[in-house]
Image (cartoon, rainbow, N blue to C red):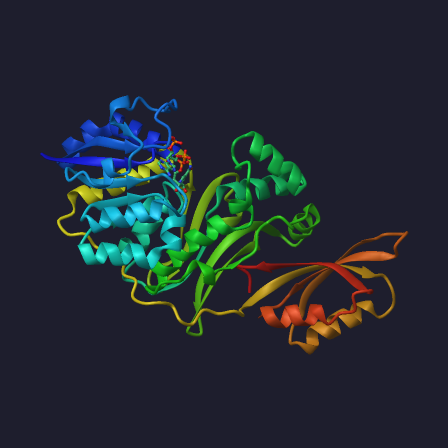
Length: 423
Ligand SMILES: NC(=O)c1ccc[n+]([C@@H]2O[C@H](COP(=O)([O-])OP(=O)(O)OC[C@H]3O[C@@H](n4cnc5c(N)ncnc54)[C@H](OP(=O)(O)O)[C@@H]3O)[C@@H](O)[C@H]2O)c1
């Protein structure tokens, strides 16, 4: 039986989950896999804090070197979060030839090249299943099970907080701010929700997924990002009337030799498998050249779902004779800043003769044709009416330009939401 000493960087929510899972399942894992793991040291900020697991006080330390410089520690598990000092510690561990298992999408996405180079240079293992979608084995699927395919597209609901908010806005017609406040009370959203609701968290994960899908590094800075803060109940309701459900999607596609990477509110047809993914669940919908379309669904966060991915990576790392690094070669050069989509456009328009022909004429001038249209009442005081359009597939830039050329006095409060999964 091989015995491996491991070191933790962090012992909060996720670290405690890993400690508990190793306690519950360690004996059986050792029997099944022929390798046993002992947590030798765990780095924390505060030695006095009460822990959510029964980690012995004597293995806790607030000195990073106790983990990073201990020659007996062969595998470092990082779940301290944030870009720094986590990324520097990961690089230090790899440079000492230690294997690193991490849940940290932010450190990986922001320091990808430095982390991969350190792993390559020192022949160290790097495992990061838990960094994207918690328990869902999407990293393993992309790097192992689907490697025979050319990946055409990846579309995911990869942030549980925003999916919870949009699901409740959709089922209850509630306003964004009210649902966010509720999510914060329930501990489903952080006191500062920016990383989730503005799409940063999803962008980190998409950078990792797209790099694996297309075998070239897709920097997080190149991900187009729009959050959900401007979504209104009226948009959600109008979408429903068109048979569409609103999600925050992370989309990576290869079209005409260019890579698209974008995170934004997106309508999907009610019948699309992603439409039924509700509450804090995650799902990733992959289209591969040989496998066709498939969906991975499950819990994308939480202590035990994330510990499931981390401990599985730990076992894989512990059993590996040779570590395989991600098959990502060089930088993605052709990242698209324009793309085609179906568009949902809602606007407040003066209810007077000629407005409709002005709007359709301006769209047509830029090659955008209308597939369907609905008028939502007329305000008797202002004389304005809500007009909602679905376009045929059109270019992002063309839609934006057409809307910007419309007279602001006649047309205002314009919402533009892309629609996927519909031609
Ligand atoms: N929460 C989830 O559901 C989830 C899911 C997937 C991935 N992740 C990722 O997992 C990681 C950890 O998340 P978490 O929820 O477990 O966070 P957490 O509860 O805040 O735990 C962070 C741990 O790291 C320690 N720590 C932080 N900064 C430190 C520093 N500079 N020096 C020493 N120790 C430090 C903290 O020490 P103290 O305890 O003393 O404060 C704590 O034990 C993040 O990268 C997150 O993105 C989380």
